[in-house]
Length: 252
Image 1: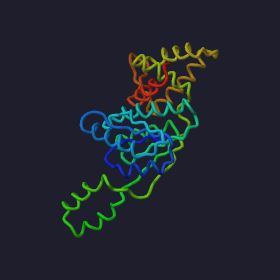
Image 2: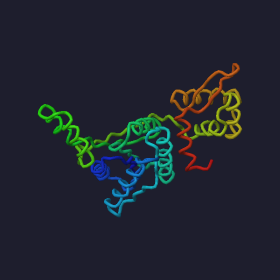
Image 3: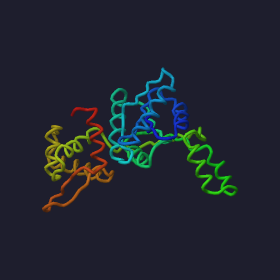
Image 4: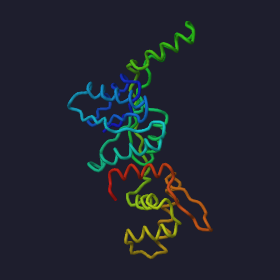
């Protein structure tokens, strides 16, 4: 399965899709204004170019100026595919992504085992040779004119294997915080224990879930602050985006 943000680099992206070997491709267009119109057009052209045997989805969109919106969109797709097969191979292509897309993918790589793929510019070296011979303005004009048609250089793919960060049951406190917009830690743990039906002593549950919540804080998924001498826990922007993506797939 391949998730591929769509931008200007049509030929490079097409080459990267072929090289990935994926049989299910999600082409993610942008949201809002001219960027949405252009990327939607490119996504449609790519779908028409790719072999009919491939399953190509062009319905998903994300605001590539807002990394949390990208996280929500990517999480939804990843969880949909993992719901079908937990062992599905996930690749996110960064060839035509924005910097916000790269940031979002890097954060998700802490939670999921991902492959990242990329095809850099192929004509960069040729343009570099011209720098000493032509005026900079002329070289820049050629870069802008030829960039979309550049077939790209060497295909790069690398696997990011995460240390297990997010156990499935740890979704419970994230969901509780999403529903409540934040809770005192003691009350949050009480609600978690009530839902899980744990038989251990409440003191043991408080120690266990306290460690879990601090781990989630270390992973930048929750934030903690002191409110009236109590520790108050709430979702970070990344944690909220993650849960929003999951909620699109799972009802609970």
